[in-house]
Length: 413
Image (cartoon, rainbow, N blue to C red; front, side):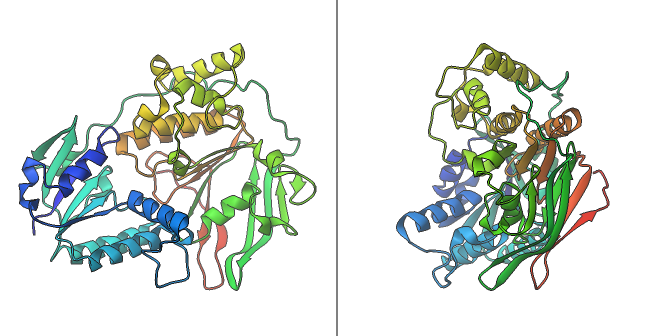
């Protein structure tokens, strides 16, 4: 079998590449002509989730009562791959297949793909050097819409960005006050759904200015734990859960809690339909809205300028958000979540889908924010990001009776 890896960046027109590969309209891949192809990607899963919720049309989970959305990323990708294999396709396009997967799931998927490779052509679209499948020995790179073939796999990955963030991070327009040094306290927290225990005996204290990384296997309950921290999970009522000095259920509203939090996860941008400029998107973070619908003040405009200058995007402030590359979008959304200097700054898988250069840039920005602000930061990731420098790591470890939590000794990558 002739397997290929195609190096892509966040500037690549991946949608057109996939379309042309499936239609065998790329000269270098003429051997695909007349063959049937399939796409293995996170976007394919998202489309199936949307179809399931809109039309009650179950494809990957038709033989189970479980909804696709409720599965972990690893379970979703396993279900998708099993489904694609029933189609007996001649080739499968693997769009960054290891995104959102923990280490053990990555190893399992890699072995599965190696077994599949004996009878099915695999074409890996890859953004991160460490993700390159070991058994692939044909290489190409997509750059400026053109495919170039290479003998050396190192040529698939461009040199890393040399941009640095100089100067101090801009100050908040209005400080958010919290008298207590402890922002979040969970004591013996238990979360069950029906007869299934998801989290058990969770103890976690988060103080001002602390920089935490949250890790755990797919399905370990990280999303559930985050929903406890943001006050969205009703399972927090009646437990020893304290958010910004108040016990959960003591009369605070969900908006009282959320005003103290800056939150970003890539899925937030998936369904954006508005045509907002970069500048307006950034200012909207001060109002906790998606897009800006009221005239900004002079102070807000000055603050946006300071942040955009810091991340080297002031010169394109009037560009529409949806026209940005994926890496640029992540920088804007990370900055948007931080612009009000919240008490707690949560980044949920912010580097998923990014190429090496863009991921390095975002990690550098997060490190700077954590070091120079009074905000407590939580960085959630399955991947061990090079250069990330948290003060502490909190791990959810799965057991038969639900996940337990523990603080790990911190070693910088």
